Image 1 (cartoon, rainbow, N blue to C red):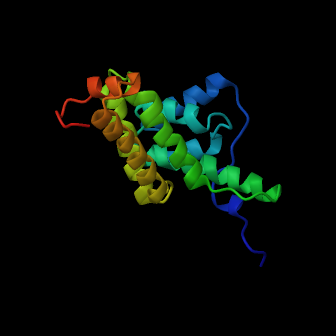
Image 2: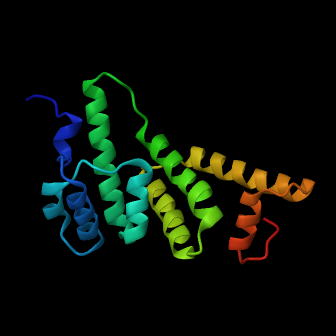
Length: 172
């Protein structure tokens, strides 16, 4: 019996128009069974555009993580054919933390998107699709920047926007 390849245990992606990919995410956010969705996984968004579509549609965390795993497992499978090494959990963690601190935090007026992204990071950690050490290091670096800004009186627009979006009253 031949050993199983990684690609044998998850649905392959299909090239589809952008409209079909958006329709897929809409179905993913709804109640369509995953075994049906597995037959039509689009080869479309990844990275920040994937995250933005999941956040905008508020796809349930379990279903969002399933989709993320399918996309990144397909990427690993393709990279193995090209003999390249990939660390998808680190790539996804960078994408998620960049999105949180560079895109959402400075400009969001909708805490639901922030909360969703934080919950997704937490859920992905428990599912093994995000790298805890990297996430903590990136969060620590961001908070260190806040502390430095606050302590030394440096007024940056990112810090001002951060303060404007927090309601807890903590120093940072």
